[in-house]
Image (cartoon, rainbow, N blue to C red; front, side, top):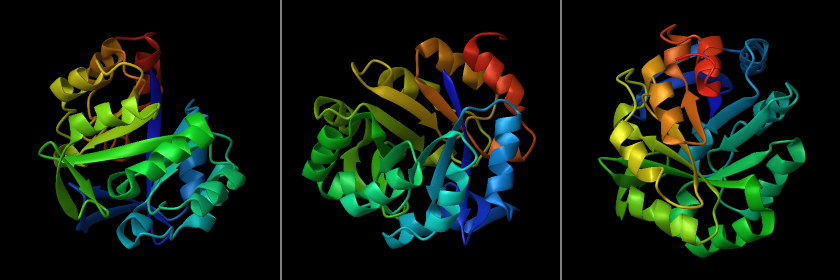
Amino acid sequence: MKIYPAIDLMDGSVVRLTKGDYDRRVTYASDPAETARGFKEAGAACLHVIDLDGARRGVPQNAATIRSLTDVGLFTEVGGGIRDEARIAMYLDYGVRRVILGTVAVRDFSFVERMAARYGSAIAVGVDARDGMVAVSGWEETTALSGVDFCRRLADAGVGTVIYTDIGRDGCLAGANLPLYRTLSSIEGLDVIASGGVSFESDIAALRDMGLHGAIVGKALYEGKLDLRRCLAIARGAET
C-alpha cells in the first residue's frame, strides 16, 4: 500500500481544515515545497495536494505553488477546482502525475468518462462524502448521491483510481472509517485511496490488509500523532 502525505493549500500556505470547515483552519507552514522535501527525506515517494481555494471557487488558485511542488520529485496528485480539460493539461504539463476531478465528476459525468478514456491512469476522481452522501463545491454542498454507489459507477465508466474522503472524520484524529473502506475494497477494478481520519498505525495496517491502494495522512502527521517513516514501513508490511 502507498502512503500519500497531504498538503492542503490556502493562500499558498499549508493548512488543515476540520470536517471541511473553512472557518476551522490551522496553518502549519508557509513554504509548501519545504514541507514536501521533508516528506521526501522521510522516505515518501508520493504526495497528495489539494488546492482548497480552487475547490471552493471552481478555478485553481495555487497553481504556481503546485508547480513548485512538482520540482521536489515525488509522484504528485493534485485536486481542487479542476473542472475542464485545459486545467488538466496545465497540471500534467507542470509534471503532476495524477489529476483529481471532484465536483465536475458529479456535475458532468460524461466529461469524466472522456477524460478517463483520454488520459488513463493520470485521471482520478475524488469522492468526498458527508454521512455517506457525496459533497461538492469544496464540501459546502451535499448531494443526494450515495458515495459508495458513485464509486461503483465510476469503476464501470473506466475510472481506475478513487480518493474517498469521509468528511465527518477529516481532521478529527478519530481514526478511519474502516467498515466503509472494506466495502469499497470489494469494487472490482478500482484502486481506492483512503482519506479522512487516518490517525493511528492500526488504521494503516488495517487498510493495508484490506488491499487498498493507498492511504492519505495529513493532520496526524502535522500534529505528531503519526511518524511518516513508521507509516511507510507499516504500509510496506515491514512493521505491524
